[in-house]
Length: 327
Image: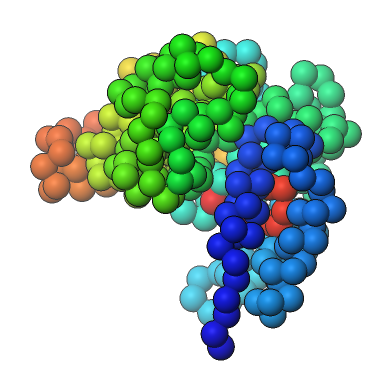
């Protein structure tokens, strides 16, 4: 079937959703001069022309149906018995294999998903009692797929703070270690920038928004290892003193006090938690993953393999629209 959809309609919808992710639904409506009903109508029009829904409208819940080993499908919570406390200035890394629940946890914090059980409080208030936009003014996201618009660096940054001065924009770029002129045209989807530069621009935008809590969801994904490690180090340096949750599958950048705590997820549960040195010395999934990572890095020539620590036996083991997939 040959489909023809006006480019401007799609671009406008993408821009609205990107601004809503950064600043909230109501703020996006005010900034772009559109009403929520107009956005809903635009989505319906596109769906009618495509013949299928653009977004899933299933109930936003953390209980998800996931495929089990090979052919067996079963129902289990995407997250279960997860306890996490983020006090002002605290930095926590959440690690685990793909499908462990890392991104699901990030989406719960942003209230893209609501928990079926348990509590989630922000500054002592139940997050479920707050409007989603109010939550996302307190908790911001810098994701691996943050959208970059076909405009200048300046205009991309001002999505986060429209009244920001050029000096404030340059300060945000400097914090993100991105040396680029504000008038640089970035191209469609940031095509004129490298992957690392696009992520640094997304970080600068998130820093400019000045969220009290910042969630970094796999910001170095899809980058080569040296670039990913350099970006992670700069992300952690730029967010020092800011309450931060870093979701990552890579462990190399978490040593030497880079974060206050590491939480290891497996199948939606916390199976280990503690500091880097503690987890690297203990038998468990963190150390096993770290050793595999070191061997892979040595094979690729990114860093020499480090010797395996002596074995120790320790006591046994913890946006706007649609439903995001679990991490």
